[in-house]
Length: 314
Image (tube, rainbow, N blue to C red):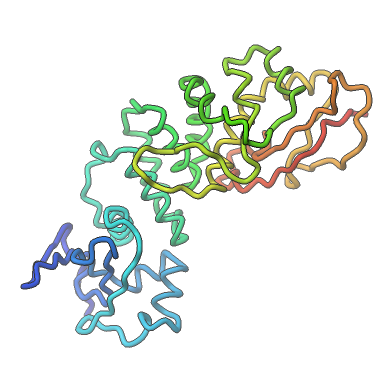
């Protein structure tokens, strides 16, 4: 008969001062972080393979770690992840979370989100992230808010993603301006649309719209040394700017114009744009289109917008 899981926080120290955290009695895999190899986690390969296709490939495929495993002779699996993030994820997988939510900060959550995305098991953290959002104090600074933008995006919490991007715009306009004031960055949106946005008197500086890289953002998303995926950051920041443009987009529609969005929202072909009220053909590059941004789809950040001109409605 299979032994029951270990009690939370079970730790055994051997003669070499190695700390073993038993997350599953009878576990057939020992996971260690390369940054702290003396800290080991005894886990179940079955549970890991069930929640993560990455672990499934490593533990059930042709890798050496996937062969000849047993509780009496467990395989050691070294990983290059930070030990605190690794422990956080493994405890969630084995239902051994003992940390009080009040002690978890945004830097912890974004680390959990990043490592869950790496092992393709972000779905298992969605409920925990939602519950944490529900109970947290939300007294966050700029960097912590950025951490939570990325956390909400990875863990499929679109309502919090929209709320947080709005918070960045309304509560931290100076900080957002500073990260986009770089002459070396490519323009994200043409001057005409920026001017139109300014005329709408949005509570954001027009400089926000003048510079973002096409494929990476320079925002330091948190102050704890975590290197975030540039594509993810780019999507998050572009969505912030897309939110800034919502009033402008509505004004375009009121004038009988529309902005093409991504394919799933019926993007229109690329016709000529005569008779528009700008010095140059107005162009919007939709890193995240407005339709996707406003939707409740948990995959709204997979939107693949491109640069298209505004078109005249017939």
